[in-house]
Length: 119
Image 1 (spheres, helix red, strand yellow):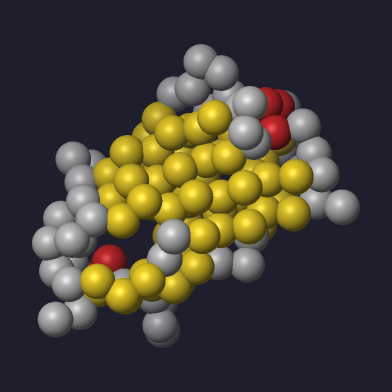
Image 2: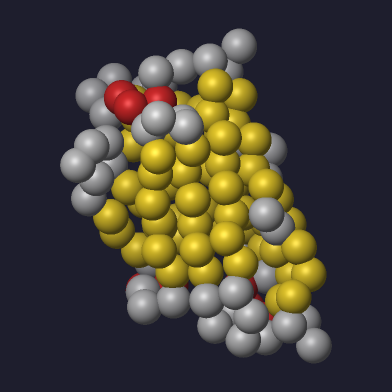
C-alpha cells in the first residue's frame, strides 16, 4: 500500500522556521522525483520545491528561493522541506508528491499538513 505521510506543520509567528517531513512507503522511493506543493484557501495548488532522484537536482518556486531547502534521504524514504523567514502568505496546506522519474503517470500524493503563519 502506497503511503505518503507529511508531518511537521503547525502554527508559528512570522519570521519563524519549520521543517516538514514526508515519509514514504509502499513504492521504490529512490526511483521517484519528490516535491512539495501547497494550497491556500481559495487558491490553486502550487509547487513549492522539487528534488529529482539521486544525485538530486532541486528547483524552487520564486517565492521560496533563498528561504527554503528541499532534501531527501533515500535510506529513510523521506523528503524534507526546511522553510525559514516564514510569512503569513506562506499559510497553506503543504502536500508531498511523488512522481516516477520515467513513468510520469505514476503519481502519488500525501494528505497534507497545515502550516499557519500568524502573529
